[in-house]
Length: 199
Image (cartoon, rainbow, N blue to C red; front, top):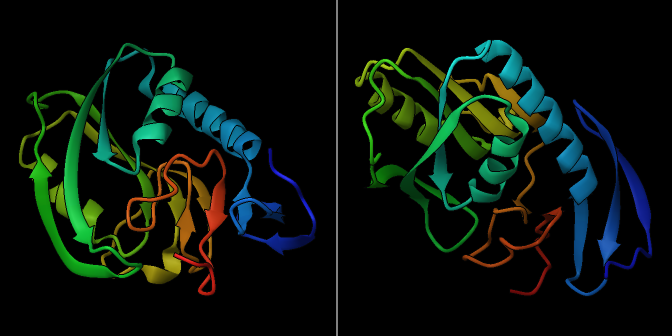
């Protein structure tokens, strides 16, 4: 159970949210599970509309996008299949190494198919730029990107998502698939990882 002892309102570009202290974890909630569910449902409706009944391949970027992909897939009302890729650009801390490595490639060809790359967070753009170039070489019919979170202030590569859940400032976030040293992925809310939080 989450106990709220304080609340401060923070204005973000897509939402105004109450950031509440989570006592048991010593973390602050940025987006609650209900806010996430509502926004994912809206994104799913938009994707459904844009596809106009055509089939879709949803490509989740492991590991962080797994919860988002699962929820978004249920919100998209078209014939959809899944595939997954895995990349590495982070070490065990909060900073990206800047070099993207492909750890797991697609299992099935995507030529001539509608492809939606599903990512937990778009920040520097290095990973998604790398994947976009890789996938375009396979000549999909369409290639779109859905990112739950967007950090435009961190962008190093010129790339934007077609569908964005929430835009946020340069904050380090965990939960709902996002981690710190592989921890906290199972939190149902998206929380802040503060510098003074014990590891």
